[in-house]
View 1 (tube, rainbow, N blue to C red):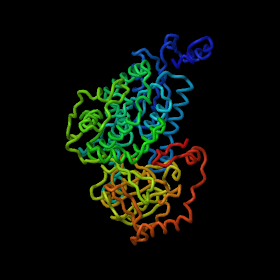
View 2 (view 1 turned 135 degrees about the vertical axis):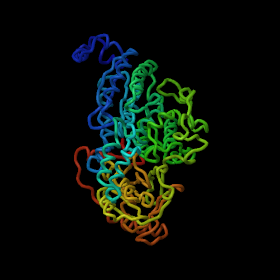
View 3 (view 1 turned 90 degrees about the vertical axis):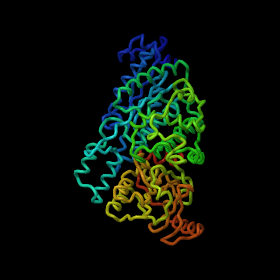
View 4 (view 1 turned 60 degrees about the horizontal axis):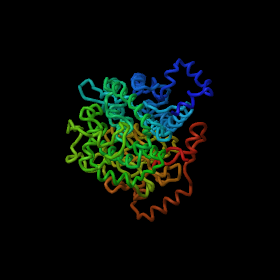
Length: 563
């Protein structure tokens, strides 16, 4: 066993003495040592219950003959970090989580790992660590939050809470109405109740084969979540025994399965940031052309919040991730021969699975749309690409041409929206919010929620080199690459220029200058002239800011660190 390096032989007597100082017995040190990576803390609602999940995981490990050793991982609550400098730190923590987990796992020579994440960057960060370390590893999330219930009986969630602020600013909601959302939108522990980033990544972790059934959907408050945790603890011992490792599971075909599931579920656009970063740790480079190909042939089967008015708890009752995957197999859209952490193949896992509610999971013969939830656009404004959650875009905004309203930061854009300076037909551009420019690629949930709350969600588009929360809905196009700070075309667009996009054609272009439509070559000349002035200088940075700015890859490469 790997742990023999710290527990066996007279040379390791000093190492053992420190284990004894921790209260471990000789009998425990003769068993496989399993690292339990728990991201419990008191600042993230999705993580406040993870101590209970960890105890259940450890019970399962002991039942199966292992010795659990718990250590922490950090986690940021994106909702609390939203709308201020804190969001600049959110994405960066993904790399910190991966790096610190690598350090702890190798420093202490664990034989296997159980990862206990729940929220946005914690899940992909630990998946990156699992791929990098390639030790037997399995995941068990903390589970989703239940949906809220307003005083009038309507169900609610965090995205409604953000939009309520916009409605208040527009005079459509009073303070008592805002308080109703404030008190009731997020009623329990767990990752926020819609198909936002956290739940997207937990569902995809299950779908890609790194977690047991129910990982993505069993509500945090259900005892079934504790039973899942115990079974996860037991299963890691089987993975150690059989030496099944993450890269045996995380193959290129498995990532394509995850992308297919992503399109069917209507996951967060952040999945298009995280999946490439995880794949990169496996030595696999995902093609966004392939992502578009997958999207074009994968029907969208679910309209969970923010795309619709159903929630993860509803998906769980309908059969969960496995039921969605079962529908996809009816048209041969998944590779079912692949190995998973169950020790069985995808096909074996799906035996006997049924779709229990066709209102929640549409049959593949009757989808919400014949194409997937996410699309990658390219064009003169995004030569390397950009991303939109097309399943959450109003039909009227699937294509649009309008005048640019350009802002160099999120705060200026929000002020303009709340001041009523954005009108129907406008294309709001928020730049210098990319991985290097922000830095940290902030989520633009506040401006998109403000647009929707002000009643402009069906008439105004927002384009940014930043990213979006999974709670974002509307014509929100993010990850524009190259970003403005790297000299991408977005840096040289001015207010009054005409921008056009088509989700169906997968295009995003500048089609006019100062209100006048021009041929592409003329537009290119104007943008080149503007580029001679250079980009807006970014302020000096220190510490984590500086390190991330110096090494961050583009959004279309996963926004991780370069090699």
